[in-house]
Length: 124
Image (tube, rainbow, N blue to C red; front, side, top):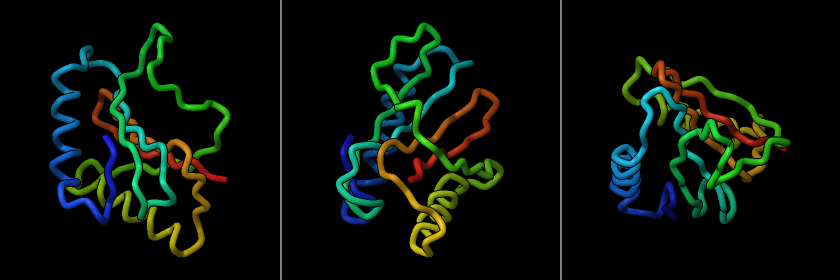
C-alpha cells in the first residue's frame, strides 16, 4: 500500500484495512509479523510503501530485507494504546533534532507472538 503520513486523508483507513486484510490471510499465530516501510519518496514526510509480511521459517521470502543494514531498535510500550504511534513520534523527533540519521531504505515494525513490538529504523 502506498501512502503518506501527512498528506493522505485516508491514511488510518488504509493502514487499518491493510492490517485487517493481512490478519485474515496470515496463518500461524506463533509467527513473527512485520510491518515493512520501504520505497521512500524522500523522508518520513514523503510517500512510502507499507507491506505486511510473515516471517517464513522455510526461507522463501516474498519481500527480502537486506541483512547488511544497520538499525537502531526502539521498543514500543505495549501497555500504552498509542504505544506504536508514540514510538514513531519519538523517531521523527529524533530525526528532526539531528540525533537519528535515518537511511530511508527498509524500516519495520516487528510483532512478536508474545505481544512485544520493536521498531527497526535503518541508519546511515
